[in-house]
Image (cartoon, rainbow, N blue to C red):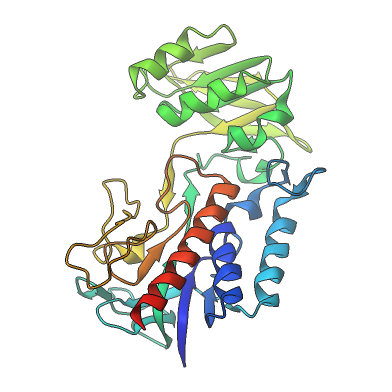
Length: 334
């Protein structure tokens, strides 16, 4: 069966794209993955998504988005994509078991070996998102959404007049700390080295802020708590471990875009984020598409190309954008 569009990813971006393509009467298939829903599945209360004045739990919001997409006819398969062929149209996407050593067949094709099922489509939307890089220390996974966060713009409001820790040394960590000062009574930045790698202007803002303290040459070894976070175990360069009582921990050591399977197929930047090509040189199609990748007919939406905002609402907006671009692109081919 030939689909008009296959969407790879099931966070706010992918599901929003599906809502728009299906309402445009495009035959849409969405691969959700085994763990569908994106970062919001790890979030507790969401208060900054429009339309929910009392807030909504992250998993519930994703469940509603999924049901809305299905209502308009999006077919959803909860399997991981293991193979793609973007060399020729229609494009092919495979799901199934991956055999170790599977490798690219050429610059726009990656082979999937083993027991796989292949689906074809006229166009593709890549909406695979990005994952937070976590510390991997005891207590971290247990308290995600209960005092452990990776998004100050999302969760800072919940820490009004509280003491929070930010872990990291790049621009993202500096930005998180500054946002938190608008709510928290005290923000402590913990960094494992003796200097930040962030830009000078951001470093100056942090080290000179009256609400921010910095602990150098120190790592977080454990996050403690009962029903929610109540402290962190800190280890300094001399090996001394001590507990610091805190109400929240914001991990800001980076994000990893989920673009591994597309490496060498669509253009990416040095950090692995997919690059958008508003106009492909020598294209036979005249219109420019803001969500287009370096491969004609392949579009991208969400955190896998956006390393600036990383919000549920911006991901959803990018999903809308990609869906409308796909509709226009398919119409232009007729």
